[in-house]
Each structure stands twice: as structure tokens, then as C-alpha cells.
Amino acid sequence: QVQLVESGGGSVQAGGSLRLSCAASGRTFSLYDMGWFRQAPGKEREFVLTIRWSTGSTAYADSVKGRFTISRDLAKNTVYLQMNSLKPEDTAIYYCAARRSLGVALLNTLGYDSWGQGTQVTVSS
Image 1: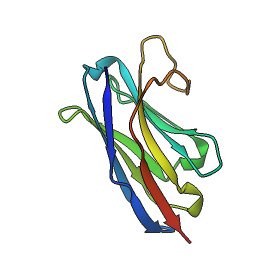
Image 2: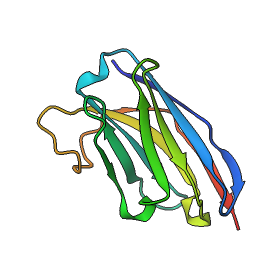
Image 3: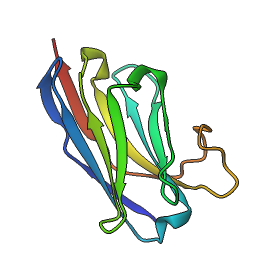
Image 4: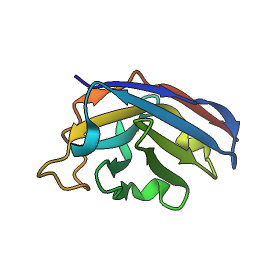
């Protein structure tokens, strides 16, 4: 079973930056995708971006392209979400998620079956 623990959320003014971390344990992650999703108040959870552990390939939602970056540290089994040029509409609970990547297209946003507890990001105008 995969365990995911997020950290790094907080409050920031518009235009600022935050970095979220997701520490993963419980598996060898070479055949996994690690993604970030977010859920704003009153809205459904949405895909933000993902990284394929084995290759480092990434996929991003259009709303965050050019502002957010995902990366991984193989030695630490940790995935990072660097968020720059934050906007008030980025305010949400951010969740780290994992799925087995075998046979799954990276741009497919479904199939994530392990989730972290979430971390709050608040961007004020």
C-alpha cells in the first residue's frame, strides 16, 4: 500500500510562490505516476499536473502551464510542486496522488488510487 504525506501549504499573496512536497512510501515507485490534484471550495477536484516516476515525463493542466513545475527526488521518494505567480483562483486544498503507470497514458487523469491527506494553499489578492 502506498502512503503519501503532503507538506508545504500556506498562505501567500498573489504573485508569490510556494513549494509543496509529497513524501511517498510503501512501494517501489519506478512503475508509478505521481500527480497533484486540487479542490477549491464548492468545486470538484481537478487535475493539476503529474510526473512519471521512471522517466520524469510530465503533463500539466492548461491553467498552470508556465507557472507550476513538478519534479521528483528519486533518493528521497519525494515529489515537489513548485508554484510561482500564484493567483487567487489557485486557492484550494492540494492533494498528492499515485497510480500504477503501466499501460496508462500520462495525460489520462484517471486511475489515481492512493491519496494524501491534502494541504491548504490560500492566495490572497
